[in-house]
Image 1 (tube, protein in one colour):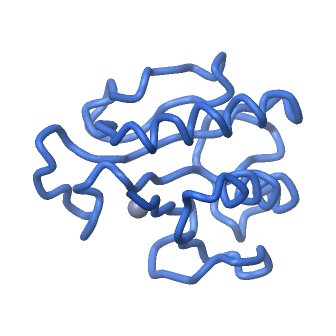
Image 2 (cartoon, helix red, strand yellow):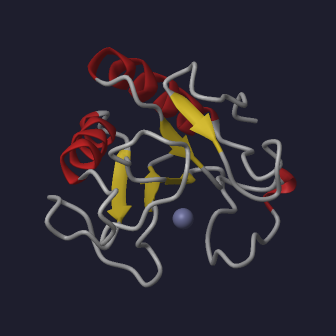
Length: 141
Ligand SMILES: [Zn+2]
């Protein structure tokens, strides 16, 4: 399970069910999050929000169609005010430059095979319905 964090680790945790019950993760996702959070913390004082990964046992995780392997994670875009709250990419609080940098860090890891997000100004993201207030990362095994 992803260690729960209020931001002191470079990331903060959110999502349902609460207290990390939806954050059971493959070790590859854990190392990716730790690695990116470490780099991110050296560049920016805001932490990024990590949401749903998988439920224990890899059972179905509605409303997600995926999120059963522990190799997918939803991340919130950065807000200008840095508050640990959701933001839509069409919102005034949305920080495109910072979100783009964060996605770049994830992609630079070499283990991310796809990013689903509807702000198509950001390079290498693909659109997907309802991916407006988070981006979805798919990690290779
Ligand atoms: Zn997702």
